[in-house]
Image (cartoon, rainbow, N blue to C red; front, side, top):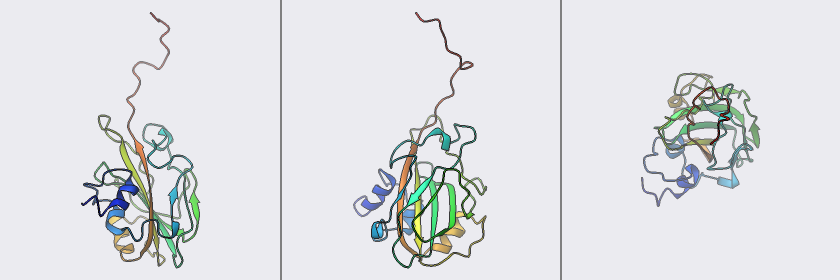
Length: 197
């Protein structure tokens, strides 16, 4: 993948794009649709490229999906789709969401979306980020797609079925990258050691 022709993708993923052909936005987006009409995706919980709080990951009990917000998409958009993938983990799919109205909106922290598809583990829920302990921080790419038609896809569909349904119908895209590195568990029982030298 040539970095020159994919400057928009480098902006979307917050870094190098080599080896990221597997991302949905790389397959269905381009420089014409990325950020079209000022379309953006953001989160009140983290800025683009920032670390995800452990409360959204496998490192914390009762973790949930982070909140997301998006601006108004261009005219003629009828539905929005959100896909979250691990750019540095082979494109592991963490979340598939659709049925979102084609207008400015948001998903609250832990909110159950209208329709959810199967993640990489075959579950219809937010797959908690859990990169290997020895890895550097992984980039989790939150991608939003503005479509020119409403989807008839039933909940529980997988990534391939979703991509097939929206291919050729994407009017605008936006993305937000969050990073996460696993923290090793503290040794001992977590009590302070008062024996200072």
